[in-house]
Amino acid sequence: MNQASNPFLAFIQGNREELIEKWELKMKKEDDQKLSSVISDQTYTNICNEYINILLQSFMNPDDEEVLSKISDFSQKIVQLGWSLRFISTSLSEMSRILFEMMTVDKTEEEKMSLVWAFDKWIAPTNSEVLHHYASSWERTVSLQKIALQELSAPLIPVFDNITVMPLVGTIDTERAKRIMENLLQGVVKHRAEVVLIDITGVPVVDTMVAHHIIQASEAVRLVGAKCLLVGIRPEIAQTIVNLGIDLSQVITKNSLQKGIESALEITNRQIVSLGE
Image (tube, rainbow, N blue to C red; front, top):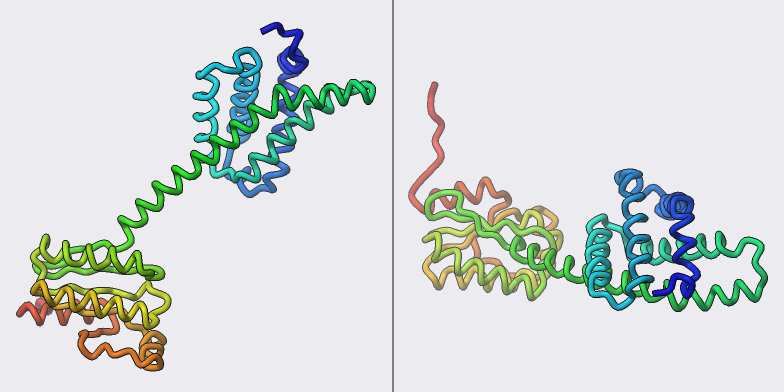
């Protein structure tokens, strides 16, 4: 590419340090100390330099696959830094504004307008690709996190021989209730459990739907040859259950995990004893 056809290439190369310095300061200001308090100055400098390198390479080889690969890597990096789409979009706009102001000192209105059209041709496409790849990287990251959370949302933990515990934290919707049921049934068989304790200490609300799912899980556990105990019933949860008229008479309930384990040991013909000195 003929450098003369691009009004930005030579200017950015000749004024790179000043441009990055001004842009970095603006990014930190826009960040409002949310991330700058934990991200080093060098990180901001590195990100700015990396973007400028991508921009320059896109000027010289706009259709090069390597440019798209570098944009993808760059976008993944800023996702990992925790920068929001709004912050990235604003930062790219600020970089363009700073560059425009630096290049239009003592320029006529006609020359400024000509430069505006040049921005749309040479810089806007790269910015668009960065935002596109950022969105894709963010979606992939969120998807992986969702899968990881689902895997951890209903763990079945063996605590003694033939006794397992499923601690539940957070709200329980239909999808999660299905996973709870699957994990319970698979875990009972895998660990040869005789007693399963469902601990709802970390469940903020137990409504009719949640109670229904718990009753279903308890019945399913019974059908595969084990007993189910519901533990962690706080006073406010107990009051809610009574007010809603939920019938848990077929489910063994305890107010704490400790009492639940004691009951589970009794069911399996064991008990906790104190050893004398």
